[in-house]
Length: 233
Image (tube, rainbow, N blue to C red; front, top):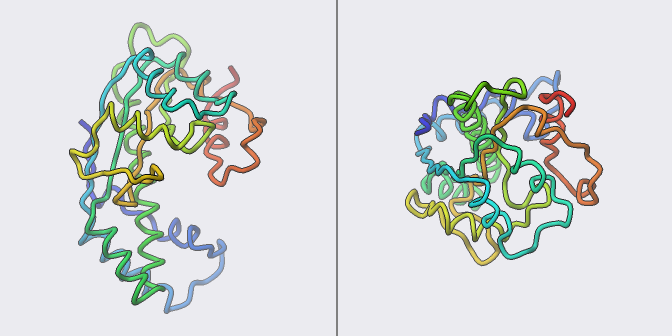
């Protein structure tokens, strides 16, 4: 099982400043630094990280990935997961209290709410990185042909995997056990939650070019990081 702690997930101040749009090298104002300090204090007191993980075969994941049939015709994950050596369905949440506090602050202290929201978003991204490292730490089957293994999280709503894929993912994983629910638009509650499939295998399987039709609409080009981490296939 993956272990998470608020201290491990707490984002670096520089990452929060960047998420808020503060350019590197620009000196933050005393007011901004005080808001960040308060937001980090709230995060430490309210974050309740929890996760659920389930191993699946490529055949089992094929059903999850197909979902309602809304995926892009050339979804990169369709060519990646069959070459993986290990697949885990994954869901994580920072818990309801933190999300509720963000909502309360947005209604009464927008500035602090925005900073706490950025802190929580960065922490959720950190949780995905922790899960990826956990998968990479597991034994490599066989002789580990194909070079060093890398693991990355692929989530519904990205890389051509339609967001309605959350429905099949939830049916297989049951993250309701840790308090995560889906609404009619397939968005998760608490909001500071992440889900998807952890895909582990030779690093080269993750390499792809940003040449798909939907890449122009992407606001989270994690593929750039993955391509840099993977040698040419």
